[in-house]
Image 1 (cartoon, rainbow, N blue to C red):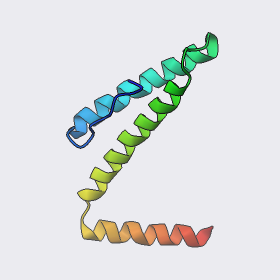
Image 2 (image 1 turned 30 degrees about the vertical axis):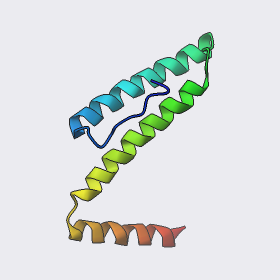
Image 3 (image 1 turned 135 degrees about the horizontal axis):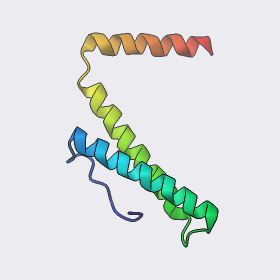
Image 4 (image 1 turned 60 degrees about the vertical axis):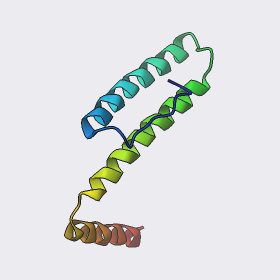
Amino acid sequence: MAKEKLELADMTVADLQAELASLELEYQQMKFDHAVKGIANPMEIRELRRNIARILTEGRKRELAVMTPEQLELRSKLRIRRRRQK
């Protein structure tokens, strides 16, 4: 899985969720294997984390795409409010 290019735009939401669950399980197993005995190429762990992040980003992008303008406006107001609190 390390060198494959994920085609996320062609996947459905259910496919994204299934792929995410699969990658997270693989990531946990790889972390365990690396801690116990080491793996041949530790850079695979980084690539797996990045693939998980890509799937999460695509899911969020799709979630924002279906929001109504009112929901987006409320979201923007919340983000501004949170920035002021820092």
